[in-house]
Length: 304
Image 1: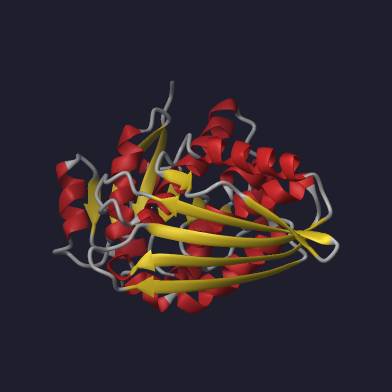
Image 2: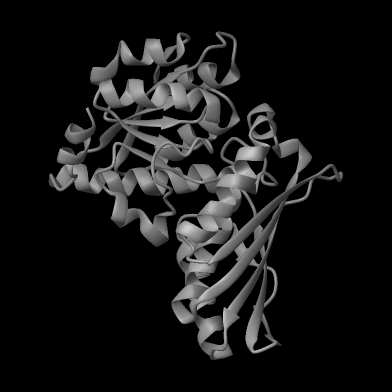
């Protein structure tokens, strides 16, 4: 099977963890990592793994544009807003792991097929990847009037990029609950927990849905969890879905835990692991269309 060549923009924790996941992919082949800090551990590891490297960021990457088709941007929201038009002009497909939201929001199991062919897709946020699929699962059983999520992550797993993007996280995740999950209203909260030893990522999801069959709701939620576990093995419900009567509706409460695979990041950093896992899943699906010639290049040409 022909592998699709991929570049990693950003040599921090997320970019480095992503590199190891891409190295395991049967359909994607990482060829180059770009950073801006010459002494970064990520660039050193990339060189050890046989990738080309550049310390000139996006400019250095685009000097080697013939070596890749896909770009995974693992920098920051503000940086991606500068990178996006440059990548588009170079004819490269961007998979954005920041909350910049330049391109349409994408959660692999919910709406990726709608956006295959877009030159830039956005992975919402770690909280979005962990919770939006379950809100979508509720919606498939009954209309969702309101969805609220509280994402709690270990303080140690929140690096400078995450801390700089807190406002974008809450905004983008809430919009993802609505636009992708299908909730009429959405709200997102993030908590950085300094506990020692560090906790695993935990997400609490509250949904208010129209009167519906509780068993159908449970089956839909549990089926979605099983599908997520195919690419995020450490994803699990901590308890069975709690479904209660609420006025003339149903209140659904879910407790989700995400344990990282430990490729580069510690296992408690499930919030970062779910982003890199989702990025690989999205890249692999786009790659299938590229190999089959079904990727809609006319969309990109219309934007150039």
